[in-house]
Length: 266
Ligand code: 2AM
Ligand code: CA
Ligand code: CA
Ligand code: CA
Image (tube, rainbow, N blue to C red; front, top):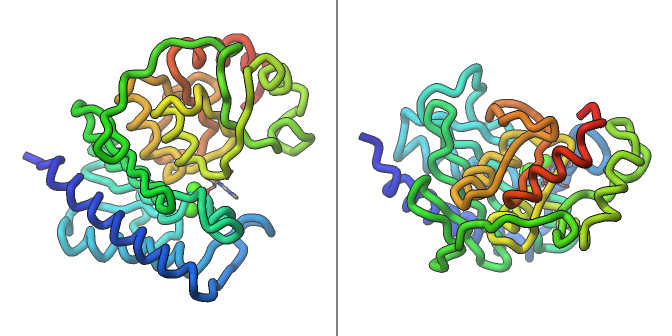
């Protein structure tokens, strides 16, 4: 039998240790490179943090597999067994420019089913955690289940680029949602925005394209609290895919999906 509580305990301790190392790096010079385009950034600390987790996991759990953003883990063709999905720094641009508003995100899956969700907002020292079925917490504070809401009362997390002209979307599609919602916010870290949906600080979050390491931990946390997770087409995420993401408290999810997203080709 897999001892999920043990795995959770190790993972959280490694996250705290990695967080300390990241904070220590604030006083050293970063090596910054670009990836797919000029605003898609990666640093030596993203890479070093991913390697730190891989070493720890290999040592303690040699039969577990790892999918990491920076590519030091395994190449996965399936989701069999226990798979750790790791984003060593989610919000790299914030890490570089602001030295805050970034997180370490770890989702642990068994045969494609989410078992442990961990998001660590390093600078605020807020660790969002759940072992499926055992409740979700910020540090030691237990989070209440998410109540039903409406768009008109909702603060929605989304990136402003989705309402400007760009290749993925007609800018007029999401502007009615922005207009009808109580407010919108953009934090620049999908993991933090999903942790905020879990904790009720945001009522919804949506993004046109995210990778498994961006949303892998967040959907486990949100589902544990009764929130709703899907693609922007309303389909369930398959954890290995790049996809659009819509996560929200009940009610708000259905309203966004049916009243605002029906005409889009996401
Ligand atoms: P990252 O910082 O780990 O790259 C920014 O709005 C959010 O989108 C961050 O969570 C960021 O994760 C994520 N993201 C996903 N794909 C991205 C890309 N190609 N370029 C920049 N950010 C990306
Ligand atoms: Ca990245
Ligand atoms: Ca990310
Ligand atoms: Ca990242």
